Structures are given as structure tokens and as C-alpha cells.
Image 1 (tube, helix red, strand yellow):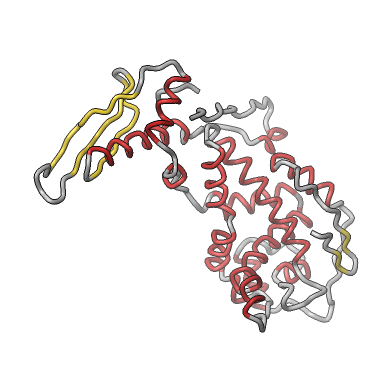
Image 2 (tube, one colour):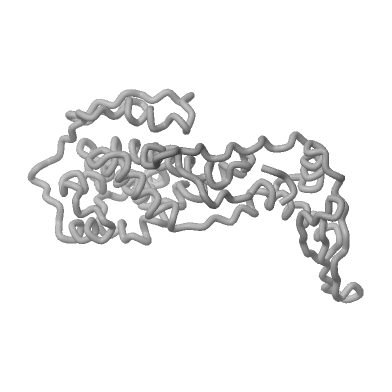
Length: 307
């Protein structure tokens, strides 16, 4: 390591206040609490009872204590029922997922640049990632939705979007009925702990060599020097070069390629990943501060170098 370190959604008995788009993700928990008071009630058609498959699904994913009516509302998409659906719960769940995921990534990777941070967050809670989770859980077999008739509506309300909406709503239902701690546990169990992200794609668009030089200059370190570590097949049709990038005697990263230039670029990118992607192994989440006797805030990383 070389550097230290909606329009308001209204159902029959539901009123939601508009959350300001300017509110930071780090204040989302406050937004959730303000937008969804504790006396929110849901209006569900009592004649429509959850079936055995839905009961089994709820038990399998640990939602056996969630009220059956709320569970059914969470898996009811707007295409199935225009009045009694999961839109409000999906909004609530999406905000909770964003908050807990952002909190975790901020503590685990305190030095990530903004673009890399957005990439990491998207890897966990993008529509594509959440839809894939829904398929893994078998949500498509129990959710209630109808395929829109027009092609235009199918793009916005197809099965993938319905699955994503239902996963968001399940988190929202847990938050609404069982509280923030239960919702956070669900997010960590099914979204965060279920995936390990690869940060390399987040750095592919960086001008690696230039960025590394700026980073070293800011820390008053010696400039980066590339050195050939090994090679094979130089005079063949498929040569391979292994290059290391150094600051003084300290090796910052290494990379390989079919040319020296490619290997050098990958070595510089590897150095950036090692610095910005440094993981904090032991930390307490801010939302868990009340659970420990002496809370130590997680490390606050440096901003990225200006190129």
C-alpha cells in the first residue's frame, strides 16, 4: 500500500409525502421516516387471500412473520391491480436498499472515487441485479402481474421490471411492519452478503498512467517508473509482457499484455485499484452505533486525485 490512509403515490388509505430529490443518500433514512409515518395503513382486498405457493415462498426467504396480507400486496404489481398494488412499498424498499448499500460500501471502500462508487452501488442494487435476485428466489412464480398489451408498455412494465418492483416492495414491507433493523438484515442477507463485486471495470475508463502520476505528486512520492518484469514469445505472433510500476523501490502494481504499452497501462490501473479499492476489514456501520458500547466512526477516505 503506497498511500495512507412522483408524483405522490396515493392508494385508498395511503398518503405519501414527496421526498426532495436534493436529499443525499446518507440522509435517506431520515427521508424514509418522514415520508412514511408509523401510522401508515394499507388497504387490501380481504377477499383475496394469499395462496399456498406464496406462503411457502415467504417461509423460504424468512418472511414467515410478515402478515400474509402485506406479503401479498408486496408481490402485486400495478399491472395486476391498479389500486391495491406494491407501488408505495416498492418506493420505500428502494430507498432503504440504497441507504443500507451506500452505508456499507462507504465503510468498506472509503477511498473509492465517485464514479467507481456509483459502479459498485449499481452492482448491488441496479434493476438488473435486483431482477436477477428475484429469479434466484423464484419470485416470478408467485408474483401477481399481467403482461401489458402494447409494446411500449411492455418495455416499462415487463416481467423483469415487475420482479424488480416486487423485490423492492418486499424490503419495504419488512421496513413498514417490522422496522429498520429487520429491513437492514434482509438487505445484508440477500443483497450485500450474496455478492462480491469486481472493481476492475470501474477503473477501465480512467487515464491510468496520468491519474497515477497525479496521485503520486499529491502525496509527494517519487514518480511512477515502469519496469519489465518478464516476457515470453517476443518474436512470436503472441508475445506476453509482464510490467511492474514502481515509485522508488516500492512496487505499486503490475499488469500483462501483448505489448509493453498494454502491460504498462494495466500495471498503472492495478496500482489505482490497490489504492482506491483498499478494503476496511473491521468497521462498525453508523446505523449500528447504538449496538456498541464505544462507537468509532469508520475511516473517511481521501478525495481522488485531480487530473
